[in-house]
Length: 150
Image (cartoon, rainbow, N blue to C red; front, side, top):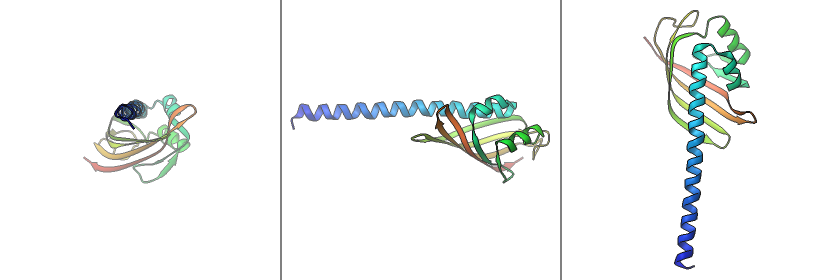
């Protein structure tokens, strides 16, 4: 193999790696935006946006250590058991494998109404699992664990 052929192959490989990296960054940015949109919709009680972001089979292992589905989450929101005066989410890591994306980080919130720890500052670790479906990225599973209450 000539030196020109080796250089051509090397350049082609570098272009493929660069293209894959750019695609990964684009998907990661999209997932980060969706994850933050889901947080904002949760704090504002925007069930229309949440319906668009949540897969119909969405399940949550919630901070009360109970696994709930979409219908149960909606009921908890109606009862004021999922309500916040403030809510922030810090994404520490996004991992993408094919049609699956996982976001991990922490959340700080101040629950209100009938929510556990109402009036206190709550910090929790979270993991969200997203799946690329025909209609776009949908969150299919979530884990949230309280690590501090002040």
